[in-house]
Length: 65
Image 1 (cartoon, rainbow, N blue to C red):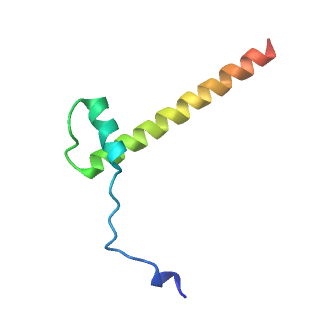
Image 2: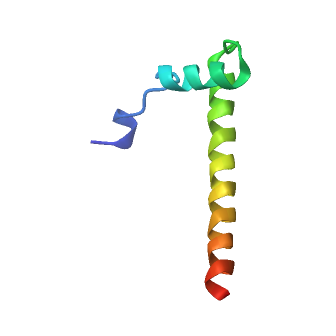
């Protein structure tokens, strides 16, 4: 089989209900569209990565002392 056999350009990814609920809790309103929810998911992922980096840096400093 070729990879083209699996390509489905009409496939549409929808955010999960949990992501929509998290969005509503964070912003206090319903999302205008799915793109808004996906941007929120990206923002949370970036925030989590930053806080994890800061936590690791703090641990490294504590180990040096």
